[in-house]
Structure formats: structure tokens, C-alpha cells
Amino acid sequence: MKGIKSIIVVAVVLITVVGIIIGVKGGDRLGEEDFVVVTNFPAYDFVRAVVGDKIDIKMLMKPGVEIHDFEPTPQDIIDIKNSKAFVYTGGESDEWIEDVLNNVEVDEKKLIKMMDIVQVVEEEIVEGMENDYWGENVGSDGYVESASASENAEYDEHIWTSIKNAIKIVNDIKNRFIMIFPEHKVIFEQNTEEYINRLSVLDQEFKKLIEESNRKTIVFGDRFPLRYFVDDYGLDYFAVFSGCSEQTEASSKTISFLVNKIKTEKIPVVFKIEMSDGKIANTIAKETGTEVLEFHSAHNVSVEDFESGVTYADIMERNLKVLEVALR
Image (cartoon, rainbow, N blue to C red; front, side):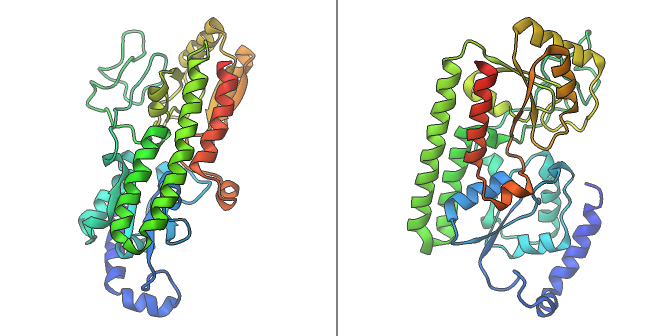
């Protein structure tokens, strides 16, 4: 990641003189206070679900911003080193973490990598989708059915979009945190049970909705970071870009493919994801007479949602409502 090496060098120097920094900043979180550091909103919410108000949580990626371009500050790296636990996803967006761990001494016992908790799958390029890597894996018609055989294939990092995965991650965080904070064992277990019960109900509601729906296909006029979600419930999907694609412009061929798919299968909704300008989805909707709705991947939340305490479960409840419109 651009600039990461210089950031790490500066951070190492700052860590060396951390006593001076604490002296200057007084009440900064670099003192003896117990706190944990997380990278993104899913990690934040899962930790919050377990610890409640017992432990302070610092989320590195600020609400309302595009997280794929994140670069840590020296302060972030110092906080990671001094935290009681560090929870992160892994994958392409977290490549900077490996550089940090290689250059700054961090206790491995406090590292919780969420992609290690669940079974991961490779990102895929489905029919009609724009492809970041125009190469041997592109079919003769310009479209790709799967990128799994490509040397460019990456593991899909959006593991939390599966509610089943979210349950596994929350439970694992609970077990790890009980070892780190044994004095809070009872409350952690109570909090976890309550949250997992709520997620389990949501999982059953999604399952029931999809089983009772005749339509099993959804279309995204946007990135598609929901591979784990559709795999859970047996949904088919078509989209403009893969989940971590850096592309922003769609070709006329891709737009035409999705327009024809919507018309042929009489699909009533085209989705966009959170924090998207919705331009491509609106173009497709104009051509097909469909409605544009937002399906939230929970990758990050708006400032307003964050300040109001919105949870991953709240977001999935919103998704349940819009998916019902799309399938029925």
C-alpha cells in the first residue's frame, strides 16, 4: 500500500518514544487503560456485542468513508501495539497489517483474524460482470464465469455478510476475550448469547423468505460484496463488479447484459450498495423501469448510523425488508 513503509518507520520511532508522547498528550488512550482495536465496522460491532460497555473499542476505519483506501496513521499503529486485543478481517483490504506485524513487535496472542475463523471462498467473476484482470480467464464473448482458476484470484474478504459466519465470529471473539478479560466472563457470555439468538432468528427469517419466493435471482448495478450471503441461501446473482473491484465505470456491454437479464426474468429491483452514488443502478433502472433499492453490505456505516448505535443485526433487518421487495 502506498506510503505504508514510511508510516511504519515513523511509527516505530514514535513507539520508541511513547513515554514522551504520553507525557505530552496526558489523557490519551496510550496509558494503562484496557482497550481493544478493530479495523472495520463488522469487527467493531461483533466486539461490541460481546463486551458491551465493559471495554473501550477503537475502530480504525472511520464511519462514512471508503475503506478500501485506508492507510494507518502512526497513532493507529501505536494503539495496535498497546491494545489488549486487535481484531481484523484479513484479505486484500488488510494487506497493510502484515507490514505492520512484520515491523512492529505485537503479541500474537491478542491477534484475532476473522478470516481464520470461517471457511473462505475465492472472489468470482460471474457472467456479464466487468473484470479487473483482462487476461486468459476472459471468455471469447468477453465475459467470465469464474475467476477461481486465475492466478489473480483473491479470497473474498466479506465474510460477515453470511449471518452464519457472523455467529461463528462473535462466538470465537467471546471465547478469546474471556481469556484476555476473565473478570468479565459472565457478562461476555450473557451478551454473546443474546446477540447470537437475534442473529439466529434473522437467519431463519431470510431462509423462510427465500424458500417461499418463486424468484431466486437478484441484480446489483454496483459492486457485489455479498458472495457469502447468497451462498448461504442459494440465491443467484448478477452484478457490474466483484466485491473489491476498483473499477467505477461499466461498459455498454455489461449494462446491456444486465438490462436484458432484468427484462427477461422480470426482476423488479436493481440494487446498489451503501455509500454508492447509484449512478450505474439508476441507469439500469431507467432502461428497465425497475426500482433502485440499497442492500447494505455492512462494510462501513454512515456517521449518523454509527452515532445512533446501529448494529450489524439492524442492518441485516433492513436488508430483509428490501430483499422481500426484490423477490416478491
